[in-house]
Image 1 (tube, rainbow, N blue to C red):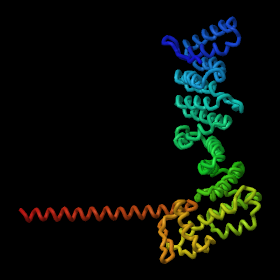
Image 2 (image 1 turned 90 degrees about the vertical axis):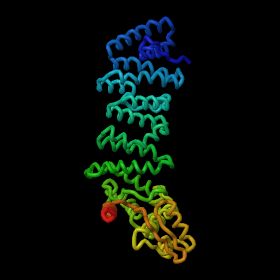
Image 3 (image 1 turned 180 degrees about the vertical axis):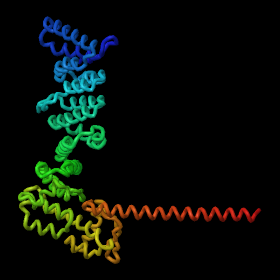
Image 4 (image 1 turned 60 degrees about the vertical axis):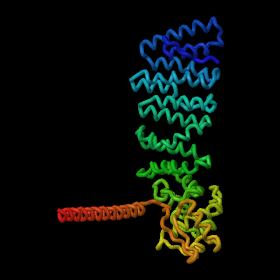
Length: 411
């Protein structure tokens, strides 16, 4: 397949246009094609001379669409690299936006779109050429849509790690953030390896409803239900901020979903016995949400062990663990090890006295109370460090004084 190689005395965009025009008209025969290509190239030359870059994009891009089925993927990328570079030719932000929307039209992407993976690479290249935050956000949003429609989400998922940085750059409003977080969560939810990240973005989505009135909160109901189910299902997630979020808390008094909110409350604030009582009365409901009882019991045992760690002196008798987790004597240490492996607690097991000594535990929720506790600890640590520094300085002054006195005696 022929590759476009611009000559030194011709604008690369014109070389590309000549190439794609030849391809576009190739089926018409030379008698028809040659005059048409010549006419179009003369028009392109005039637009280049006048610096009308958005008009040039409108001339090139429709013809360039033909190449997706006629040249190699490498050649498609090369051609569109030159086309995308048109955004760097103008200093007019509005013209840049026009060019971007010629390359990526503001309309739904058709399901049968050709070579979506190649297009996604092209669009990401275009994103990197842009400076205006609104244009960047537009391109990224369309790239997300393309990844979903074209079933090539694996190419866009790595970028999700940089979303916080992107948001600082884009400076988008709450409605756009809301849509972005939900779209990303939907992309991640069907992949078991990314389920935890899906819940994270879904939580971010629900957080955008904080401070909204009841009518707006209603729109978050479906997402809130999904978040509770995803949290309960996630066997490696033991902490979340869902309970007090307005978008989730509205379910507490909802006729249809109040029982689901109650389940979340059990997982975040109660122990295994509460869950077992709940299951005995609502087993059908749990099954309807795809929740497996045995998995829920296993998670609640770990959550209950965390709760035991958070009260009292930090010393938990083996018998209390056995009774709370409803397990056999010989399973106590096994569940403690599971909690350590899940990084829920840091502890030592005193086998002689049959006591678990906990030095640190993970809170199931991180509410205002936990923030206040952390603030108190930081203040205490700061005071202790201040005392240590004062003691060191006092000792240094005393030592310097002693050395000076010794010098006087010698003289």
